[in-house]
Image (cartoon, rainbow, N blue to C red; front, side, top):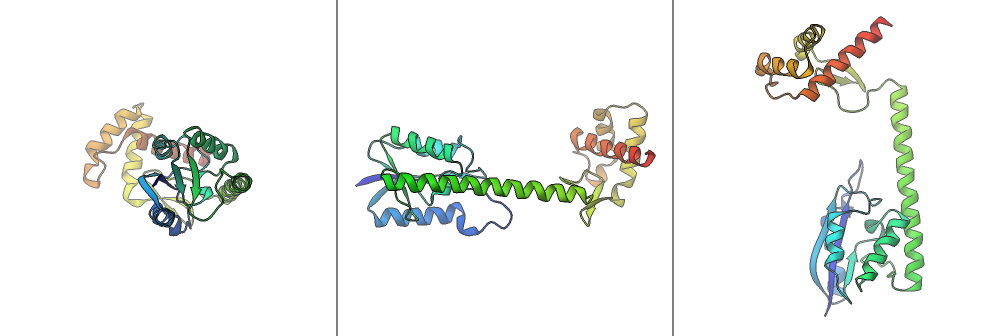
Length: 228
């Protein structure tokens, strides 16, 4: 019986369909192996890793498990790569191990001329889709910034309202305390320790220096905007 290793990859994003989860991919790949009398040696997976990245722990282990005559079974071509050069590199690594790649969705194997052509076209199209997503994301973020919406995680002491930052009344005293200490010449680390001691009752006993420095920088930015 021919040996096979299954590889799955899932990079979640907003509105991603659960049908592309690693678990669903594994189910389809195992069904493919049963239908083609393949003996599964192992299942390897990568989570939260883009198909535009070559270095992946799960993929490296999957390829390392392959020997001459073995098959790497993947749910679909875009689960293997979303970049033409990366797709070709992976195919070369598998071929160097003496193995081949099979796709559970019925895509022709890369070991045939037709499969190589289809695979290259799919890799190029996946790369195009990835670039479109990146461009749309960039445009969306630029639009939000233009509309005055705050991008990123809100600093300690602020919350969000209609996409914009507003001060959280719960931390009003903390903000005043922090900026007073800063104006007295205290360092971020010193202010952090002071806040940990003074405001442990509201859950700040373990607040870190990075969080406090971000909070103070936001306060200083507000002051400069008000003075402008």
